[in-house]
Amino acid sequence: MSQNKLYVGNFPYSVDETQLRGIFSQYGEISELAMIMDRDTGRPKGFGFITFATQAAAEKALEQNGKDLSGRPLKVSIATDKPRTGGFRPGGGGGNGGGRARW
Image (cartoon, rainbow, N blue to C red; front, side):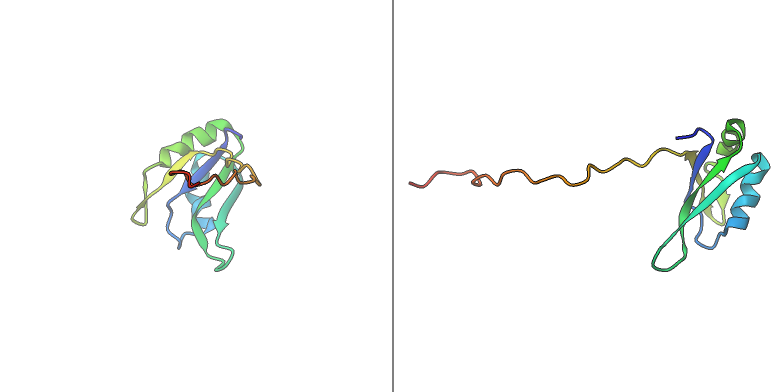
């Protein structure tokens, strides 16, 4: 994962892309901003990702971590890859449940 991509979380659901861009653009050029939306309601989930043009800008933007936004402390960190799930894993054998064998 790129060192100039940040995870931004815990922002109020009322915050829109323009507001986030306004807060973070002071640190440098934003090349991409993605707010994660709830697919059922279409409303923001309260987190997203911001990619800066430079790593230096992203590092400066980390200063926003813990800062208050409408009564909520922002969580800002370098974005990491989502761990991949192993996909399909066949179940193990059933076993006999332990206990005493009955003959």
